[in-house]
Length: 147
Length: 488
Image 1 (cartoon, one colour):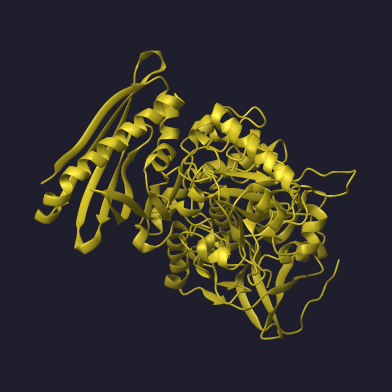
Image 2: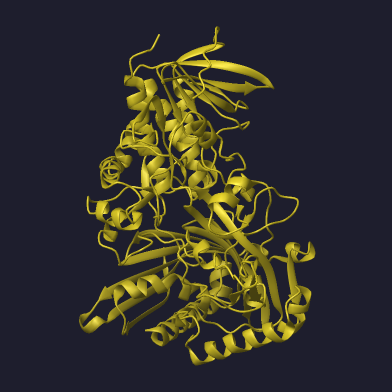
């Protein structure tokens, strides 16, 4: 059963093709604490994600794969996240771009937790939601700047 | 013209293929499937050449408008008829791969690195660019990188058919008869000469001259230029064809990135950045280019400026200057492609390479400059101006796009970079039937060529076209070679 972590819809003053070209680099540059990114394949990567939870620094192991890629309309990133103490969560982030009139593009982000144990849900559902929401906000801010 | 017909042949085949990469495989398999008895000669201990260590993508255009696109890129260096033939066959590359038992998937990369691996056309403003679609052999990362999956598929075609392969056996000389036909090849196996008869034809698919310093110095527009691909490509096919009077073309053309050279490794390391926090400077510490705007195969154009006053290439070597965030973001040398890919694991945070001294570091730009023998004042001024441009969101100096601008924050790092070849494109001139031509444009009987050895890419290069071209002209050469009447 999937749990919605965050969703965000906004419009930018840029063509869909331009947003498509920007989106990968914007996501990568916006994710705070993303380090040691290893490109495994042109659609897959591994990385460390350093984040703070209640003031405590945590290092999560992240594995990502682009799926359902349909340029320049949509794609999804399937994320597998491993934290300390055996914490594990699978997420799927879906991104859809819809062209609007006057050169604008509507962008829809949605993040869902695909697999979340009781321990993970108890401790990490709230922080995961805040992290996803703040990341989407940062992506929107950056795209608005660049549009 | 030399004529040396052996009194006794050591081996005898219908078709002999020299070089075992994508083109050699397509040629050998096609000739075999048309009934020819085929031998592949490979100078290295294993096959694969650049095919097994490249990006692994294959062009399969989605329309004949691709002809116009390639015609523009060729800048009249390749006859349109050859391009038309290429496109006719390239459209069917996917069908051929499926007939051979594999499948393809569209290449849709994460466009997150500099230089950027892009899905579409390298020159999207040209007519026909919309027809560019790259594919690779269908599979998962667990089944290998695209080029590993490609080579597993291709080498499997050869082994399944039981086609004879002699590895560690470089071809040395083509053997012609009195009629000017190529009738065999002199090779070398374990320091012994081996004379091999080719009853129907001989096909050269043995790559370019990335690892021949003399040829590179003679022909390429920037000097010196290192290589990222296989060390096996030393211009053997070019010399063999020149000795029998063949013509050559496209000798000044190359696909060229930038790479780092460690003395203990034969090939250079391909270097890329996973964050926008980097700049390039020449050997005097001056920026010279929009670092994020260089087409991935065309770096040499920016590096080949020659200073006639100083009699030097001021951008060779150059330096990449990058910051802490970029260092921590990921390894500078990605594992996707290059000869060193399987020989060395670059550390994920670049710390091992700092410890080795491959990457220099400084708390300030001036301190970093002093470690790489650049005037500290010049580099400090360069970084200060670049950071000012980032803060204003505009790069009036070189037009780097706003999305690619981020101020460099100390500590700073530097890595020395050289022009580094993916491959050269020059070699024997050939026609649309893959026949090698003499300087008068006449085919040399029973001699064919395909792949990077004299490829059809004579000016600008579209990514994924070398593998695509190897498969196309390999098939054509294999078909025509098998169709020749035996000379004996």
